[in-house]
Length: 319
Image (cartoon, rainbow, N blue to C red; front, side, top):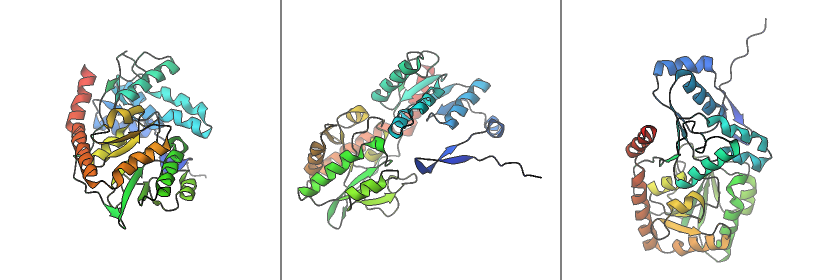
């Protein structure tokens, strides 16, 4: 007699095998959530688990808060899977939708237009999407460090096509050609790692961070740099700010809304790796300026305290 097939809780995502996609079962999860007795269901990503959360809340008559951080469903087009973008409709029916800055809020409205939902995208009640900043740990001081006497530049994120990492690689090679001595530390994993390693042989690849900005043992960076990626919400900026790191970003999307060039970082045009390299170079050998921008970063991060974020979210639910 054949054994019954065991239910698999998750499966690896093909493009990122270390990232697992949950396969939720109402029969298994409903009793667990019923015992917990939630007052609100918070959905963050339009995944199978997010879809389950929305449907569970509907069955129990519980309000749903949808937080829009990254337009994940539009990333499928970078890998020839554009037909899967319909997954973006799984959040419709939420009581309210929030974004961490005005730019993602515009993305919610665009999603609404694509899916012919109400003017507020995922919000069935017709409310405008709110802006609720994502919380981060309390700011902590971070002293710029060097590796072998060289400033350390940090990139944290998936190593995927959608991240426009060729822009980063080009900027780093321009810096190296100018004779600047630095060490690039790349934290993350993805299908572009091999191509990046070939273009940036001097870079240090640490692999996935597993919940930390940097894996244990990684020297403290001098500043954080990120190439133009229109799908990013900018939440990563506040996390770097909390570590006292100035952010070198691009003048577009959420980064433009969060980075103040004379206060907590530098901005470069999204179509100019040379200008991006110049922005980094302007800080590499100016410790006083780095310290000043690091102070601004920590002050900025203080705006993202979790108690304030939760209070703001609750206010948006009852506003």
